[in-house]
Length: 212
Image 1 (cartoon, rainbow, N blue to C red):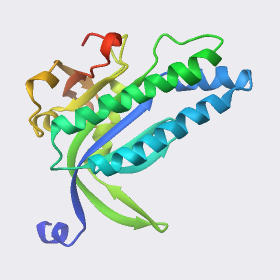
Image 2: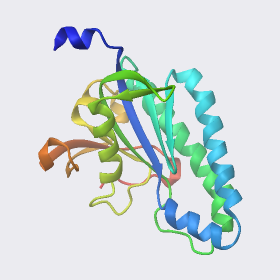
Image 3: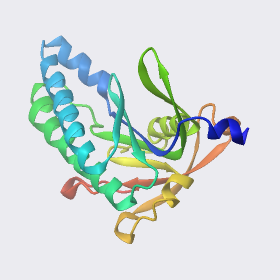
C-alpha cells in the first residue's frame, strides 16, 4: 500500500470550505424583485478577491459550488497567514453584503455572513474529464464542520470549525486562539460518532460575535 501511494501525486493540504449563510433565502428574495444581479455582483467580487489573494497566500481556488468555495492551502502554510486571509475575506464579504445585498432585500435574514470548515491531510491529484481533481479524507471532513458549525450556535457567521488535527498543526499564536472545544456529529465521518472540533471566531471589528 505504501509503495502504491508513493507512486501517486500527493499533496499535503489544508482543505478550507466556506459558504454564504442564508444564501437560499437571499437568492429567493432577490429573484422575486428581479434583483439577482446584486448576488451576481457579490459573487464576482469574491471571485476577484480570491484570485488576487491566491497569489499572495499561495492557495488554490479548487471549486465553486453554487454558494460555497473549496480552497486548498499548502500543508506548510502558517496558521497566522491562514487566519489573516480568512479575516480579510470575511471583511470583503461583509462590505459587499452591506453595499450590494442588504439594500435590495425585502426581508433581511437573522444570520448573514460566512461559515468555514477546515481539515488537513493528504490529497491525491488525478485528472478527470480533462480537469485536475483531488480525492482525500480532508475534503470529506472539512465539508462536514462547515455545515455542522450551525448546530447549537444561533450566530455561526464568521466562525471556523477546525478538526483538532488541523487546528493543532499550524501552531496558531495566542491572539488567534479565541476558541472553544466542541463536539459534532459529522455525517458519514467516524461511523457517525461524536467528532471533536475546535471553534474559532474570526475578528470582525465591532461586529464580532462571541464563541458560543
